[in-house]
Structure formats: C-alpha cells, structure tokens
Image 1 (tube, helix red, strand yellow):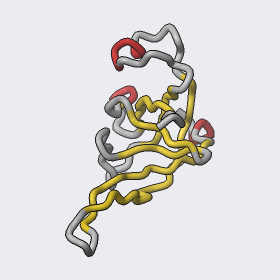
Image 2 (image 1 turned 90 degrees about the vertical axis):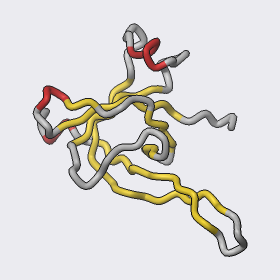
Image 3 (image 1 turned 180 degrees about the vertical axis):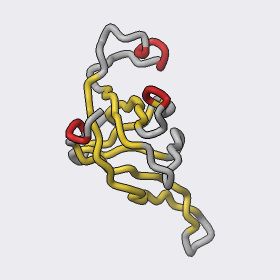
Length: 114
C-alpha cells in the first residue's frame, strides 16, 4: 500500500480508571497517538459482519494504519476518533500480507443514544 493511501488523520484514545482525591475513582480519557490511516466502509455482504456480531454494517469502517512498535492495541480500553466521532474497535488488528508494516482492524461508530 502506498503512502498516498493513508490520507485520513485519526486519533487513538484510551480510557482508564484514575483515583480521585476523595477515595473514589473517575474515568479518564487520554490521547495516545495521532496517526495517518486509510478508512473504508465495511461491505454489507462481508462475513465479518456476522463473525463480529454486528447487526448493521453502515456504521462500521475498516481502518488500515502503519504498524507502530510503540503502541499495542487493546480492544477493551482503546477507541478511535475521526472527525470528532468516536469509533469502538471491534476486531483485533490483523497483519496485512504478513509484512509487519501495516495492520487493519474494524471499528464501529458509537451510538448517540447512549
């Protein structure tokens, strides 16, 4: 994949539980990295839809980024922001063509009904 294919800027965020000064905990969101990515919509006839348990593919995207050695993706605590929209990571990153330089995963837009 050529470098021109990575034409979208995404932010990689992580949520964590932080102790507050009153003996309790609060949830904190931290920007980990900003990275160039290639974003594509998930095809509605893909087998991945049923494998991931998605009901609708219209809010899901396939994100392709360069592999970073300083970042380990965690499905439980990490999410992606693109154009101020929050996307929840749904699949583990896969090594594209086993070349160890590009990874790909699926993310779904967070519902505004929360």
